Length: 280
Image (cartoon, rainbow, N blue to C red):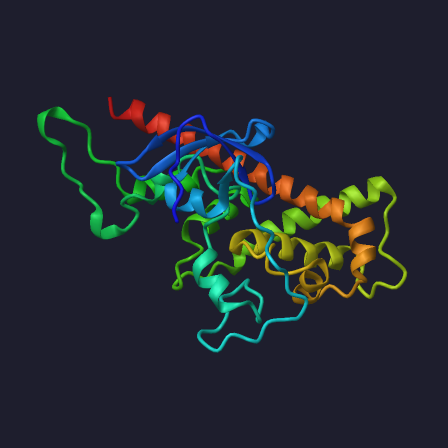
């Protein structure tokens, strides 16, 4: 049974964080939300469908999802895209990409509308109106992001579900950023890899970064236990050791992803404002 989205109602995301619904546009099928306790996320506009798949009213207690320890069978449908893990659950991949409320751009609805070349209109609008904003303008908005990792993440958010696009370079760009940040933090903390760990610290950071980005893109957190996540991601480490010593670095990577989204949002918003001024 679907739940109506009401303005000013308190909701919780899957991680238990409080979400406020600021406005609902039923005609456009979108909802404006914010995390009052996480100011860095700012105000976001997402589709109602995406919102309802990720949040529940504060008055409703979400049912816990039974997690799976074992590795899923290899997909028999289509091969994994570049940047994807080879043995991901095919149902999760095809249905959950793009449903992360964290990996949503503030102007995503604007960017996604008319993003295909067949919708381009080069004619000047009637009555002296400015030319219609087309897909080239929106691609240019992404290109205007100076930070390479933020630009790569924004590209994945927008086009990652396009089977024709090889997004391995963009995926690896974000992974490199997350891993480099973790290595720096470990050095500052005096944290080295566990003695029983076969991975070097940079390799462990890279594997963790791949896991964090991939699991968030496809919303796989509720599918696996910690042990299952490590197995899935090729991280050879005891799950208790990971939870006790490296879970905080995983959480910091999640914060880094939010920072990259914020950088992208600022650049796209600036481009939109400049585009509006230039059309006057």
